[in-house]
Amino acid sequence: MLRNAMVLFAVLSAPLVAGAQDQDAHYDRTLDAVYATINGVDFHMDVFVPNGTPPAGFLGPNDRGKGLGIIDVVSGAWHAGRGKLRDHEQARIFSIFTAHGYTVFAVRPGSLPDYDALDMVDQVRRAIRYIKAHASDWNIDPDRLGLTGASAGAHLAALAAVTQDKTSSVKAVGLFFPPTDFLDWENRSLSSVAEQLGDLLFQGGVAGKTEAEIRARAEAISPARQVSGPVPPMRIYHGDADPLVPLQQSEHFVAILKAAGNEAELKVKKGGGHPWLTIPFEVMDMANWFDEALHRPPGTP
Image (spheres, rainbow, N blue to C red):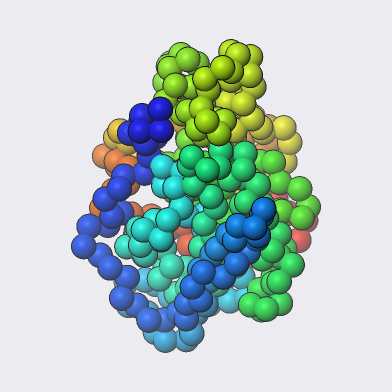
């Protein structure tokens, strides 16, 4: 079942941007900082701090992110190994955000099959709380954090955002091709989706679980099913040729967010797969959006 889940819903194992290693040195990087210890297991993040070195010209630098933080949930196929960090480097996520002055926290939650989706989103919340509690260590504003992620990481980021409390709140959320509703996956049956999700629903898979239990858990881990009130502004990028996570997932999620009175925008990448070669340009666009969204006056959406 895990193998099927990886095939159907995984982030591609190939690099996000073929051959594009992140060589920019305009940030200082802390490796494997511990943000939580749960049952004796440490959970890690890398921290990228702008160091004032001029970036490559195409990055469009500014200082709008100075004193602000972006939390990047690093997970592909619901696995959070260091290889996934390299994918995000190749997509220029850390280069582009630090060029804007942001301190970036590349958070790695747990991985299948050791942790299910509810465990992983709890780990994301713990990371947000840790970063907010220690914001002064990085000279960032704990009340103006951005949250981002791609594919599995976007799913966990979205779920954390729509179920956030005061201690785990963020100001704005930018996502790439997130799975959002496991009960409405391009007309697949619940049993089909459950078989393919397997350990994401329950540790050990769905064997022995009733249909009611499976439906309840699929609903609990579906961000689109957890929208019940105000959530942070969201911008989502999704390709219309995505072979793994249908564009329908983002369209559906944005419609639900808007129906609940929230600000949400979907930007469709024509011909975009999962991901696409020119994704750094969308990362730049997202950075520009965070520049605006995180500078709104206190109390505004």
